[in-house]
Image 1 (cartoon, rainbow, N blue to C red):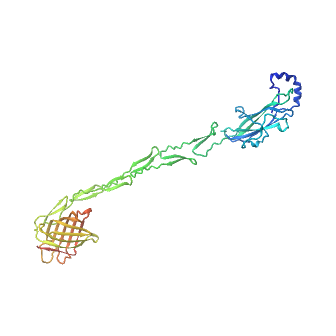
Image 2: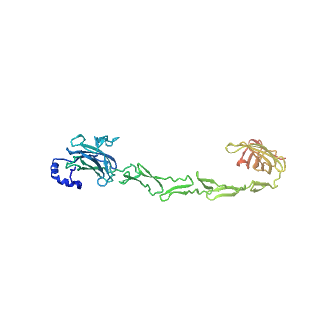
Image 3: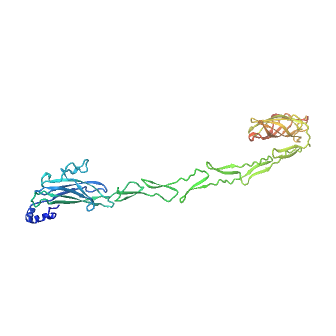
Length: 459
C-alpha cells in the first residue's frame, strides 16, 4: 500500500503545495489515503497450466473518493506484459473462470471508505510457465492500482495521484513429462508449446538376425527373424553380421546305384540308376560301391544237338547243328505250378524238324496268353535218365525256341523244354521262359505236370 504524496505534483502546483504545506501537513496527519489490496491465487499451480487469481481493492480514504481508477497486472514481474484488469462492483471471486466470467459492473471510481461502493474486484487469468526443474519454482506477478483523489478544488489533495501495488508468488510444481510410452525418451523443454519433448527411441541391437521393434508397454523388442527360403534344398541359418544365409545341402548318399538330386519342394531325391544296356546277352546289376555291372550271360542248353550263341537283340540262340537228326514230333499239354501256386497251362504239337508242320504252342497263366507264331529251333534228344515204356520214339526230351504274340502284342519270345517220362504223364515235366510281353511282363516256370501228358512220337 502507498500514501498520497506530493512527489507526483506538476511544477505548476508545486508553489501552491509549498504555500499550503503547513495546512496540508496538518490535514494529512488526520487524513488516511491509498488502497487496501488483497490478491488470492491457488496454493500451487500445475506446470504450464492456466489458473485464475482474484484481486480486491478498497479505498482507505473516508473523506474523498477515487476517480480515474486503473488496475493492471504484470506477470512475470519485471519481464512480462502489463495487462489491464477490469475492476467490478459487486465482485464475486467464485465467478473467476466460470462460464460467462464475473458479472459485476466495470467501474473506474470508488466511493468513500466504508461505503458500499468503496471497493471493487477483478479476475486475473494467468498461465504458469513450464517448470523443468525437480522442485517448485515461484511464479511472481504484481497488481498495481492507480487513480486520482476526488478531493474538491482548493483541497490540498485535489488531483493528487493515488496508487498501491501488491505482489504474489505462486509455487509452480515440476513439470512431469511422461507419455507412458516406453518407445520414447521424455524430456521437459520450457520453450516447447507443450513443455515436453517425446523423442522416439532407436531400437537397434546391431544383430541382423533380429527384427527390432518397439512395444509402447515394454520398450524395445528384438524378435528373431525367420530364415526360411521355402527351399528344401538349402540349409537356412542366420549370421548376426549379415542376416540370413542359405547354404545348398548335399544330397550325396554315397550309393553309386542312385542318382542324387534335390527338389526344392521335397528335398533330396534318390533315383535308382538304370543299368540296362539294352543287350539281352548281359545280366545288368548294380553295386552300391562301383555302380552298374553288365555281366555276359551263359547260353548253354546242355544239348550237343545245338550251337549256342547270343544275339544282343533277342538273347540266347540255340541253332540245330544237324548232329541229332530231326525225325519225330511231340504232342500234349497240361499244367505246371509256379511260385505262389500260380497255374500255367499249355498245349502243343511240335515237330523235331522246324521245317515240318504244324508247330503250335499255346501257354496261359494268370489271365495272360502266349501264342507261338514261328518255331525257331527244335532239338529232340534222348535223356538216359528218362526211360519211358514202349512204344519207343527215339527221343524223350524236346527243347525249342520260338517267337509269337503275348497278350496280342507281337515280338515276345519263348524257350522251353518238354519231357515224356511215359504214361500216364505224372512224371512228365515242362519248363518255360517267356519274355518281351507288354509292360515288362514275363514268365519263368518249371515243374512236373499236373493233369496232363506229353507224348513223344517217332513220326
